[in-house]
Image (cartoon, rainbow, N blue to C red; front, side, top):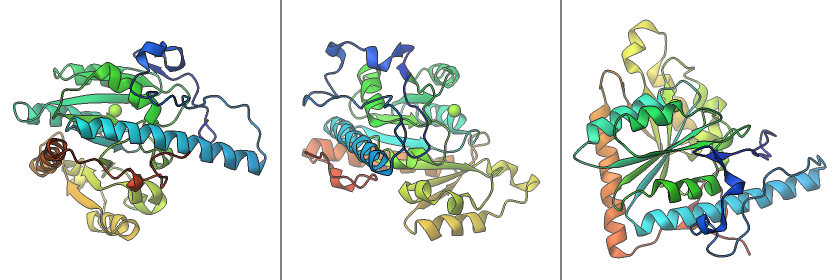
Length: 289
Ligand code: MG
């Protein structure tokens, strides 16, 4: 259960197969240390002490799985991004255009998060890229345990880029580290320019803001500078790129940002450097006793 919004996260599946029904032979990545899987479907007991304990345990489990994912990416020189946004910001179109533009330069594999459909996965596969679908059922975000299992199925090659399209939601994905190098928040100019202030946790956790659909600016009253100012007020270090996935404006800067991150990930893997998991956005150390 997501203690942030109270949603139930039971019923999650990967490629149509129930996550909790997967055989032990497929749990090598996430349970190598004998750790129990993330507990799904707690009986609801709303006492404050119980809720605090559930949230602490749930986030600690997630942080441990995220640390495993991060280590797995680091050993393989894989640059992993967690794309977060509200529904309809244009994440999937951005992904398909990114994959097409990077063709011949960098290989991209995708994990798609969606409550019920595999529509976006089909769009990714139509580009020729590998993609795996996670359906979260009633859950409103991906967690690191789901992503670890999806990675086993996706089997991305070394030195590639893994893009994780999170469930459209500006609240809960902020608290769930997936082991990514960066959260990238996508905000379209058809939304409110004050969203960084309204959903400050997510914008605080992100490294980069992609302001998407800028080709529509002539038809809207969206104040770009006011939006950027709001984002920088909650996160002074956030990078900002203005893009139109459809028309192509700004995409060269976005591709250059990805390529620079991938170069660093590959160089670190060759040097045997490990990520600092204490820096995880959930604020937990890599693994609690
Ligand atoms: Mg999508």
